[in-house]
Image 1 (cartoon, rainbow, N blue to C red):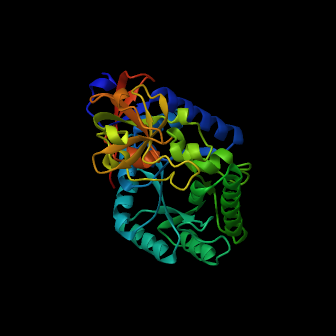
Image 2: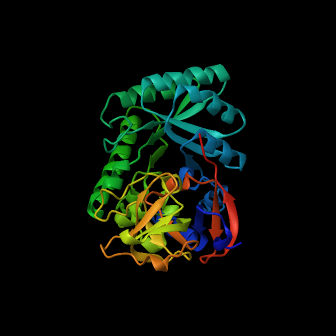
Image 3: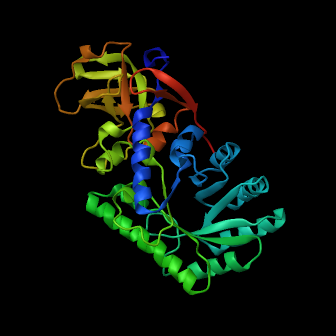
Length: 377
């Protein structure tokens, strides 16, 4: 198969770039002496996660129980479901444990801990749990100094049906950083919050074997992993325009793109119209607050070579508009109807989630494989 024969829009994965990104990130984690727990929410593909695990029996992270089910069915047992647990999902968690999955949940309240304990008793299983720590004020979690940390820890450690596995945090605010120095500050705060929380638990006679941190920006730029047992990250596999804006990767290292067909022009406005709108590219505008706003994505030729100065400036459901960001009129004759472009994503996870499969290339336009994705919840 060739990209020029595949209906558009479709999700293209450059395998050599994927391999390069994974190898580089894994090498860094190995050098730092910290385990990598790759995030299945980015890949949603057993082929890609297998590459990240490098043949080992290490565990993974997931963001949906559908992902957990999928990866478990493909032979991966050690799974952290890294979204605060909702009681309605505990029957599903218990069923996976009964089948042999080693799945841990995360929580940050006494109410959640008690719900886990009750459901575990009902099913006759033990459900491992990690306490989520708030390291940046962005989202969920217990502050390291909050007495609630020990209160939850005692429930998980002393009550039957639950077990305290450790602590977990995610420096999601690092995605809004304006400099590498600021990312390092977030990385330091992330590590310190998790390590301090672990020390507090241990000081009070509670176990804390797992100290889990992670985001692609902080893991890339962190200066110190002392006291950390594992790093969770996912975007490093593909990279995207947000990561490029943060200085985590170069544009040429972005491994996924959306292939689109040119379906028309607005010559008087210097616009090229493509058949990839926000249903194919996603509505994520993560670069809008960065120094360089990439609109709905930057434009490449069919081989994946970046065309400087071109951006998908606007999008509706099934239409994208390509314009020149320099202010100079775009020569629409360079993009005849029926020709192809590829659009680099703002956020790899969000864009990929709009598609059912990857069309895997060897770095050219030749499609060497198709890998299905597991979407939904």
